[in-house]
Image 1: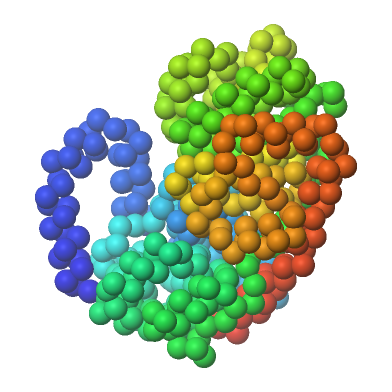
Image 2: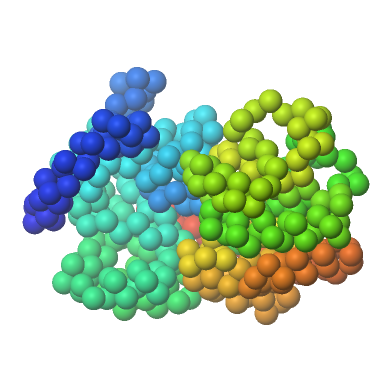
Length: 428
């Protein structure tokens, strides 16, 4: 792995002038870089540092939520281990830090000495990667000392073809994995093709089909009160939105506002820090809009604005719970889509766009059972929302179908935790 360290170092040298400028003039970049190079946390005393820990790593918010779901279930077992989590994104870290008992950090760059320092500093006893986090030095360094595996493993077309191009690198790499728990049947076969021994791979189901505990009615009513929402309002939520998708959503809003005067339109961006890009697009339509990050929400603001951008972290599930109709984004543009299951599990009528490469199997299962709809443009989105409003029985049936499909395909969580306990039980 010294060769890879050398390649990374050479790239850093070549990019160093740009990186230096970004470090000086871009506060967000500076914060993240410093976070990735830090292995110390003042809140951790030496006793807790020395306690063996299972290290979970997930790319961003979705993977972090899956990791927390597994950790929370594992913590219910007798004598559970200590956990630590790393993630690649600021949004992922913010979500992780909403769980008070969880030690969480930015992931460090894929340099051997940095990974070794983190592993040793935090007394790592094992590493669990979520979905598709196959980093060469990461896996090589950690596997030298402790067991390592993947849960809900997923190999999209893009990742699979990329890994297959470089068998000299990836076959030895996946050979270091003690286990792979695949998240779908296609990935199960692809991991084997990349070189994972059949005895080390299993497919107990997709962790994303595990229904979370519903929000309390008290919590939902509290949000309604804060946003002056009554039962007469028709609430549409577009979650995990990319800025370019606003070019479909805003024209849909104008049309729906005419036919459903009581509609309230809530946009939740996938990346809240892109609020300036969102605002520029919204302004181009001369649309009055409220951004949650601006604060100062009162009845007059509510009266003047029926189009809201909720540019905050960790609110998706709350607003999906309030919604009468839902669109899940990253799917009207070639981003591969975002997790629609967290909306469907709430028995809501849900639609997505035509770009869902990241969720092919899930979409196929849901479409076969009429548990979700796909829309390709503004006209089809308007039709879906209008039907959700005009035909409550249809909306209820669509939501119930989706929920039943998810329930039928659930059960992976218990099997995954049982497997992890076999590998790390007990941690001494």
